[in-house]
Length: 435
Image (cartoon, rainbow, N blue to C red; front, side, top):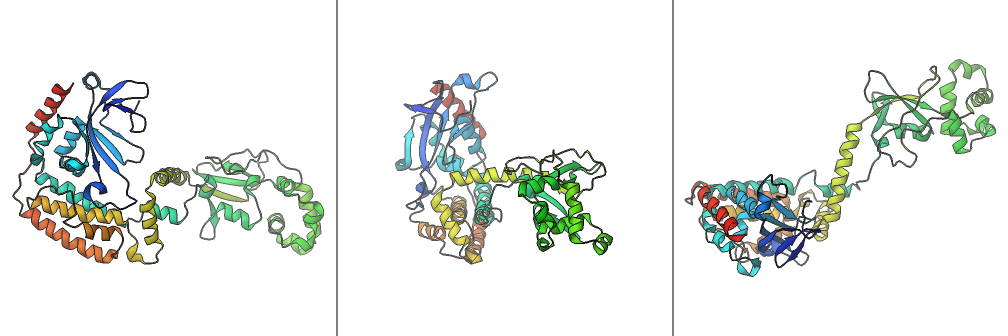
């Protein structure tokens, strides 16, 4: 069973699954995120990070039980298995490097054996950190004003669609949604029958059960044949569909409509619609058309791949909506609805961008990993978070800071890389001396 922080039990820092099986022990637990940087606001979540160690028997054999990290459903909390933690440290992962420099007042729990790791923390600060810190900062810039951010989905009121929304028919030199095409003619998808077109994937002939339409809509013969009702979209479609120009010139409306009624008043049966009547199906429906001379009212294309993509996107949106930070969402929504394009960005992502570039610059200058931003740039970062600058101004400031960061990196004299031998010895020592 895969462990999450929502389905484990922790007693005396020992981790148990729901069946009571011992699955490891927490070695280190600390506050991370905005609370750690002192950029938190009243509504900020309390994020936590940590390290745990799995029992040796989970590492031996085929390693089926090994799990390199345990997270909660919102990703606010994450603990890494010691092996994974040091693997990430070797690649100078920003979150992992920061974990080594957490001040005592932000440490929730620390097993004494972690001191073996922490006494080498300065040796993990090398030029290899420039790319992860700076690269992550650049990714935050792109993320801050990304056009595919989920908040845009919310603003356009993202709704669950059915396969019917991905069905189109020919219209003039382009196409039209089949639902709109039917509606403009007074027709109902429930009365349609679908037949595949040979040698043309995703193309279907659409046939119509007029008798079933009469029955479902309570249309009587007198109403159908009365010329005063010609403005009825359905009647107008029937008149033009069944009658030739010659018929129209030589015969009365009532006579022609009576003929149409008599020939189509009995439901064909078996025409089950393009999709289910409640629009709750995940597939389009098919039927058989016994009369080989029957003529399709139109031909339709079904974009099945588009529907599958929508389903994946909607599922992702729902998960985001259920787990999002409400205060952050409202802040970003305010910017989106302001009408000012310069305020349409994720302010928290933008704040992280400035913080990460500043930290990369400080590391390059040999100042170390400075997590508490109180006396450095905290006020500025909070101004960014509170959307006191337009994106164009922030973009200029980012470019200036990036130039300073790049120059500091170019002139940096800190150690080149992490000693892999040292890291391996630390890992072996912890594994051999803990269990």
